[in-house]
Length: 113
Image (cartoon, one colour):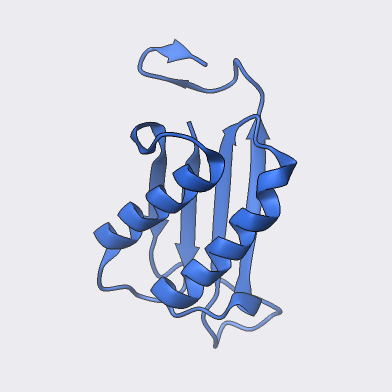
């Protein structure tokens, strides 16, 4: 049940494509089916990175049930590359926040996982 939230200060012309692509990327990296992966995109967020708002910045927040430490670095590397390629944001202005949710604290489809 991964949820990926993207906040970017840049406008994008293809939000549907970005959501589809990041869903595939996160699902593959976490070994989860795309069918249970959700993505959201917050466009033109007001982000300051290092006190500067004049350059683009992006934040990825990944939440999921019992995320593994082994996936943190590869996922972060791929999301930073994704930000460069799809969001026109340099990797040195990207943060990735990973949050592991305990079983029983994530629900959907009328049940708790």
